[in-house]
Image (cartoon, one colour):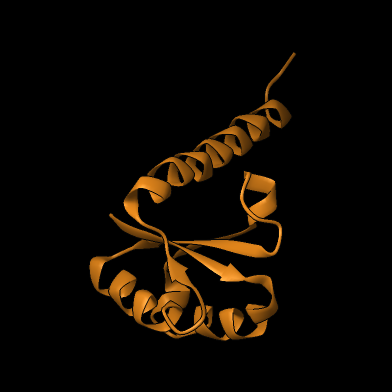
Length: 100
């Protein structure tokens, strides 16, 4: 599965939301987080788009207008943090459904 991560100024959130509502992009996995919560600058938002290669390429075309695509050296560890967060949330939900 293809993915990309962008850093978008928080002041451009309206434009970001419009790009994420694109018909193709909206069908992909999207994660939007305050960069400060993930150790980044507080005035930015991180956006992870994950899905088909064609859809990620389309997302890149739209997001280039509102933010900056992170280089792989910065994106790889951030991608892992997104995935760890997702796995932690899934594990936590399991606690609600276990018998004691």
